[in-house]
Image (cartoon, rainbow, N blue to C red):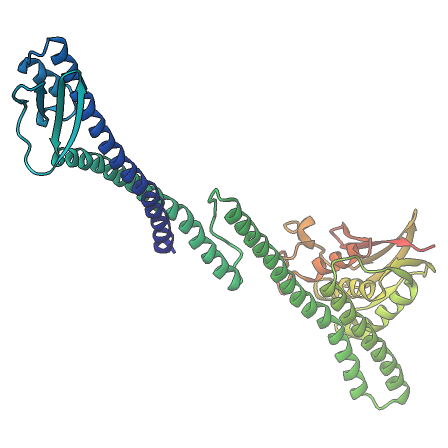
Length: 411
């Protein structure tokens, strides 16, 4: 790239020097010849006037002075003829071909000539001056072309490197500040593309992580139901467990649909009027066997009959996450209660365990914060789901633990 830029710049400069220098050289040659002929005529007329003024007397020293006053006077020769007198010469005899001019004043005739080599020497001097200026101009142009080539190729090389990095999925790009508006716009476009790609990759990773965590909980509960069905011979128990399993499959479908919606759009999901009691009853039924296997109970307080604005699948997932968290890290009986608080409905889930360690505190909802044996994603994901539905999830008491889910009441 640098060689091509340099070559093209030098070709342009060489063409410009040739287009300007050649006419200047031709015009200068013509002017030098015209000046030489004009000077010969001026010397001849000046000598004729002097000789005529001295009444036809010839003073060779004065004539030599007149010849020497010209630009090439030291090589001029004057031939003077006064009337019918013999011809008088002044100056050196020219060698080779000559340029000559003749003037007549009264009875005095003067012919002044000069060797063509003297005029050609003046032309050569002019040519050397023109060529010298051309060489200087070409040298300056080479320096400018080298500077411009470095100025352009360095940002272009950085842009090519950045394009390769974007193609490889990297978001850290080389800084590009060329001072050329077009190149800077390209660099800014690549930076925006890299940032967008980084956001997209982060969203993809979050989606994969969230999908794995959201699907694990309902699949675990469904597996427990199927184990219950396989371990009993009672038809009524099989029917009850199958009904609950079907509900869990329906919730699993809602979770998948919600994940797809989140993957396809960043807009807030449309909320609907959800029967809160129905969701809580379903979750308590689903998690009762798991708590029973652990020698614990999960109970529900008095129903409130409240209806809330939420997404049913997301609401079920938040409650399931809180119950799973209580089962894994809590102790004793887990209680699910609901109450109204102004225009909000609050769902509280508590147990009789040790609670949240003081070291975690308010950071319990951060993705990278977890206690032993957990991924640190459950509560963070539950909070994100609650906020996406316009609610909020808080730890209102650390010991014994009480988690509160605040929802907007419908109607």
